[in-house]
Image (cartoon, rainbow, N blue to C red; front, side, top):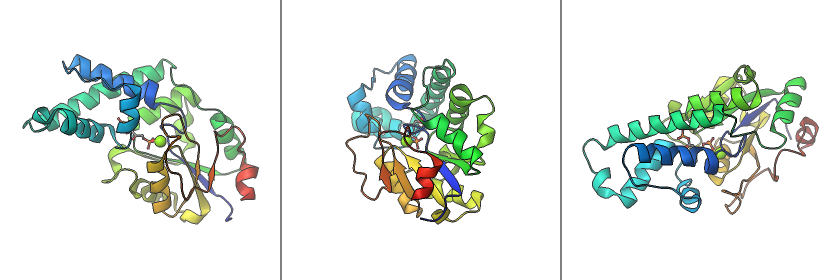
Length: 233
Ligand code: XBP
Ligand code: MG
C-alpha cells in the first residue's frame, strides 16, 4: 500500500452521525414552517438518503409524493427556500452541541496531524454545515486543519459521482494512490472508488445494510484506527 499522504473525510455519517437526529429534524422543521404536511420519519429518511444533496432529496420526495407541487412554476424557488430554512435549523442544532463526533474521529485527526498526514474533506453537504460541525464538535479553529474542503454545490454531480473526490484530489495535488477516503455509505464508497481511491467505511445505523463491495476495509467506527494501522496497509 502506498504510504498515505492524506486522509479525505466524508462528513455526514462519518465525522458525526448527523442524518437521523440532525438533518432529518431540520428538514421537518422547514417543511412545517412553510405549511407543508411533509414529515420524514427515520425509515422514510433512511430510504431518501439514497438521493444525496438536500435540495435534490426534497425534489425527489416532492416528485414522488406531491407531483402537483413539484410541477408548479415556482417549485425551484420553494426548494431553495426550504433548503435555506433547513440549513439554518441544522446549523442551530450543531452549534447547540447536539451532534458529537463519532468514536475515534477526534483522536485519529489529532494523530494524523502529528504524523504529518494531510487532511481534507469531500462531502455532499452544504459548506456552512461543515464549518459549524468542525467548529462546534472538533475545535473552533478546526476548519484550518483541513487543507481542502470540498462541499455541496462546488461540483455539478454529487455522490455517488466521483466529482467531489476528484475536485479535492486536484487541489491537494496528490494522486489517488497516496490518499485514503473515509466514508459511511455506499454512495460515498462508490464516489471514492470512482475517483480511484481506497476507502475505509464506518457504517451507521442508517447505512449498515448497504452494499460496501470494493471497500478497502469496513470498521464499526474509527476507535481502533490509528495512522500506524493505516500505514500498515
Ligand atoms: C450527506 C448528504 C447531504 C446531507 C444533507 O453528505 O447527502 O445531502 O444528507 O446535507 P455526505 P444538505 O455524507 O457526503 O457528507 O442538506 O446540506 O445537502
Ligand atoms: Mg456520508
